[in-house]
Amino acid sequence: MKNEIQNAESMAEIALRKKPHASIDRETARDILGKKLFGPKEWLSSYGIWFSDQQLKEIFEFPWNESILDAPCPFVKGKSIKETHFAFLGIDRIYNKPLTVLKWHELHPISGKQKPKLNPWYEDQDFARVKTCWFKWYLMLIKSAPNSTEKTYQEQTAMMPAGYRAPFAIEEVTKNILYHKTYGVYPNGYNWTRCQDIAIGDCHICVGDFIKVRGWAGGRQHPTVGISASRKNPYSKCRVIEP
Image 1 (tube, rainbow, N blue to C red):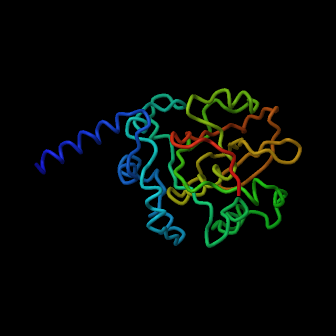
Image 2 (image 1 turned 120 degrees about the horizontal axis):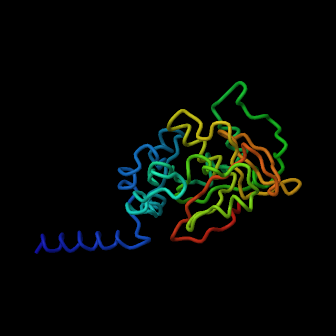
């Protein structure tokens, strides 16, 4: 009887994973993605962040299963999603403070030329001082989408395949920092990634390596301004990030 129950559970698990939006547990996701997943263990080892049992329960499931992670990347020909994407657990607070772009400035370990200015032009902008990630899993394209430079924002977002959206600045900044924490290199070289956020003068926020930030009008083109992409979570609507 015990073997029959185990076999039935195994068959149910297999059936679940065949569903289009079936999830997997985070350790299975780690087995597939390897170092391209920054989760609770990495937050603890890198920043000393502990998660409660309730929080760990909330993010036990990883929203994208093996069939999605093994599928061909819609941006990079000849590569799979697991090769071109980086997954991370987004958190909204760190050390009892909102984890915003400006908070990342304080936590940034790089010094010298790469050190952010103490009073950047965007210190009073909501995208930098208010917005945070949600406490959930993110799956984002590591580099800017190929052939996305020298295009307007509308042209760039028109390139997005089904199931993707342009990132917010806090998401792109967080991805860059956690990727650097993992690999010790910057993901985008000399390119900038245009984000959804709009600041002074109707300029879209563009994020460079780590947390360099600038503004660039959505209707303008530039040879170094591309766009990244965030995979939509199949279990939650894509909402504007609020404090």
